[in-house]
Length: 311
Ligand code: NAD
Image (cartoon, rainbow, N blue to C red; front, side, top):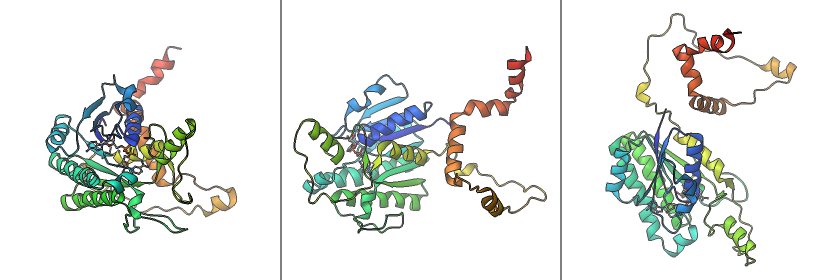
C-alpha cells in the first residue's frame, strides 16, 4: 500500500541514507523530509533526489509545532520516522541545552502532532547508548536498564520514554529502535570513522581517545536503514481491519509436526526462522503487487493463452 512517510533529520547521515533507501526500495511511497539543516545537515547529501517528485524536502524545525502539524495534515502522513537530533556526544558535553531542546522537546512536538493527526505509526530512532557502558562481556537487550552516561544519551533516553508513554497513555503505535554505532557514506567527519579517514587522507594526526581500547558494535548504515524500513512497514493496515468471523466447521485447533526423523536421517534443518521468513514474504508481496493483483482479478488465467495460445 502506498504510504507517505515523514522522515525528520533526513539531511543528516542516517536520514539521508534512509531517504535514498526508501526511494529505492519503495518507489511508490512519498517521502516528506523535514530538516533544519543544522551544522550536521547537508542538503548536498540529497543532491541525487533534487528532481524526484516523490521526495519533498522541507527546511524547518521539529520544534515548530505549527509547521509540523501543517505538514502532517497537508501531506496526509501515515508514518513518522524521527531521526532529527543533536547527535554528537562531545558536543553534548560542551553544551547540553540544545540536546534537551531538540531531542526531548522536539520529539514531544512530533508525538503530539502525530497523536492529533492519528498518524498510524511513530518510529523513534534511538541509540544503544541509552544503556550506558558494558563490562568486558555481555550484550544489551531490550530489557537492559537505562543508564545513559552523557547528556546526549540522557536526552535520547528521555525521548524514548516519552515516546513509549505516548504509546501507553494514548494507544499510539510507537516503535523505539536502539541501534549501535553506524558507519558509512555521508557521515559528518566529526565522528570517529570519517574523521580518521579524512585526516589520514590529508596526512593529519589521528586522535585516539585514552588507550583506544573502547569497544563499539559497528553497523553499516544501510543495515540500520533496512531495519528502520522494516520497523516502519505497517502495510497501512490498522488493527481495526481485523474482524473475527464465524469459525469454519470442524476447524482443527492446533498443528505441530515433529521433524526429528528428517533431522536425524536426512540431516535437514530449516534455515529460515518464521520471523525472517514472514518479513521477507511481506516484502515480496509489497514489491510484486502486480502479480497477486492479476491473480485476484483472474487476469492471470489469460496469461497462458496470451503467451502460448497462438502457437
Ligand atoms: P546527524 O547529526 O548526522 O543528523 C541529524 C540531522 O537532524 C541533521 O540533518 C540536522 O540538521 C537535523 N536536525 C537537528 N536538529 C533539528 C531540528 N530541531 N529540526 C529538524 N532537524 C534537525 O545524526 P545521525 O548520525 O544521522 O543520527 C540520526 C538519528 O539516529 C539520531 O536521532 C541519533 O540519535 C540516532 N542514532 C545515531 C547513531 C549513529 O551511529 N550515528 C546510532 C544510533 C542512533
